Amino acid sequence: MSPKPFTHRGAAPYKPVDWTGLYPPVLPKGKVPAHVAIVMDGNGRWANKRGQTRIEGHRAGEAALLDVVAGAIQAGVKHLSVFAFSTENWTRSPDEVRFLMGFNRDVLHRRRDQLNEWGVRVRWSGRKPRLWGSVIKELQYAEQLTAGNDVLTLTMCVNYGGRVELVDAMRAIGEDIAAGNLKPSAVTEKLIRRRLYQPDMPDVDLFIRSSGEQRMSNFLLWESAYAEFVFLDTLWPDFSREDLWRAIGIYLDRDRRFGGAVDAPEIPAL
Ligand code: IPE
Ligand code: IPE
Ligand code: MG
Image (cartoon, rainbow, N blue to C red; front, side, top):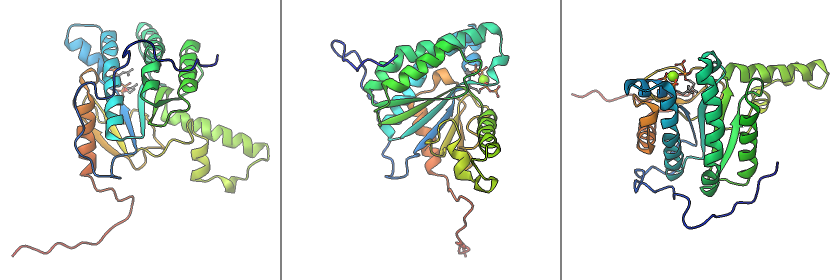
């Protein structure tokens, strides 16, 4: 399956990124987080609060994702990684799992031309086993279609787990060592990084989770070693580009030290 070249179908079929008329605050040059990771959480609670079933919450989350991608482009973020389905989410009811699989496939199908139009490069991070073939096909199609784009890299983390990503990397390294192609002393952080699902993915600068939960839930463990964490109470279907910009604002007020230290004694007030 090779992607068809992009064709602009008819009059203004796509929204420009600033269709809402909202613009990000002026952000200091060179300080915008290059890589933002988001745990899109709270869909089920959003729906249940309205007397609806959980899947209605997932449905409502689609618009939030599109809005946040557009807002990330406006803010100058280069990498956005979103958690769409975790390796632990298979423990949910068969109905919800089935819905989420079909939904991920359909969202990719519905939105890929719009993302392509915005210059978004779509990538998939995750594991093949158990993942529906039709979801993998859509992910791979979107990857091929958008391979030449460089405005923003959107990594869809589907059937992704941080620990299993490391397990897969360790296995590949182990096999190379067993085959005599690699010395144990050559195993470095850099080498491990190259065996992750997306070797080119930079470290996460800003890790956002919606819905008020304050945990990683196995998302981008290696990549987030020095990320700044921002937890917002907004449930994912209510999340918008303005929440993203708010999180970036909180991030900009943080002091990232990476283990270093600067001596700056304060002069006591008289
Ligand atoms: C996040 O929302 C979406 C997925 C995990 C696929 P949830 O479905 O986890 O919603 P809550 O956390 O139960 O409200
Ligand atoms: C993390 O959210 C996974 C996704 C957002 C896809 P969960 O809702 O599955 O995480 P827990 O169960 O609250 O830790
Ligand atoms: Mg949840």
